[in-house]
Image 1 (cartoon, rainbow, N blue to C red):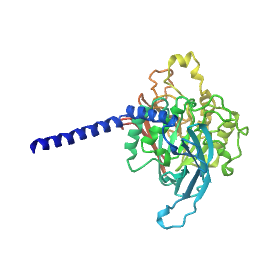
Image 2: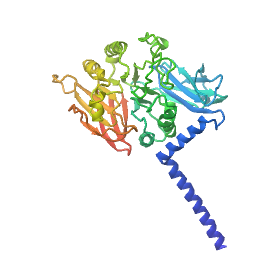
Image 3: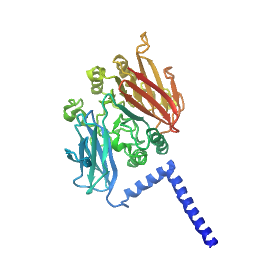
Image 4: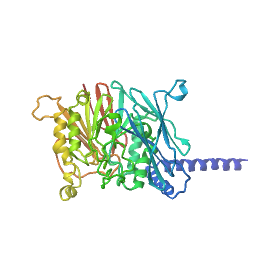
Length: 445
């Protein structure tokens, strides 16, 4: 009897060992990246039957609208999006449901993309939605809408491109920051989500899969997107390889928000303005400077909505002031001139029109500097803050190419930022992938 009892105990111990080993292996960021890439490879070869390949991802589409995109592995006729405001189906209230036929785009034989717009949402405190494809509905997702007096928490990241393993580690720290039962109210991504926009495998392994594995924030936290140099298709024509980042195409014409500044339809126009709690945010495209964008920027900076906002923010991929880069590429290859318009033209406007915070990526590390808007000003509160948050996963920039003598904090590691707008206070909390605070500041008014 003792012999069989010992064998039974050894068998249980062996099973526990195998389970624990598998858990540790599968929790490893590098292993999960490899598994994700392998599954994507299998899907490309039709190993799986027709199914929803990418669950819905929601993007901010102006103050009252959202753009939702999802994907199946085979054509799904009749795909649609159902959405409603505030209530949920099981609370006994009468709910007005909206059914939107999805727009279809074939990416390749195993990727079929669908998109739809939610809104206007008016003064609703919550938006609920679910997409339907292949006769099946996705889970119900909800978007919380905060007013100007409520706490609005925004996850700020950039430059996860080509670094999915590190991105997963950063996302694990992000999960710990927000807690297992909570998600940020929005995600501000300041560019470079993938290494090559025309490589479909990059979209899966470097962006969609890490987000999905980290709790699927992209389903309920609308993404505000300022495109980077890796997010643009060089052809810039209709039907280009920008298959996932056209969420802002036509945004200025949605429900008459504004007449289009660019009318030829040859390129996705990303620049626009939206609100996050008591903050007003202008999103710019540093990769496509144009007369239209400059005119838009001047109008928005002077607008009553921007000037009356408690906090005024600009998001643009390339910073006005870059200090870390490969010195050879910076000087000999002319990369110091990338995005020069942001510094030479736009920054003077930022200072003149009382911008509080400029958020950028592009440089793969963290820097933050608070300086006088006007060097001749005697008012110590008349300041503007520049923050570079390009450390979500890509290879780090460790070599100094310039010194602008303006940054208070420099951190040469991977990181993320939680931007919290709470009525009369803006809080900025930057953490590294280990979860330690590397920088924080607040603006109170």
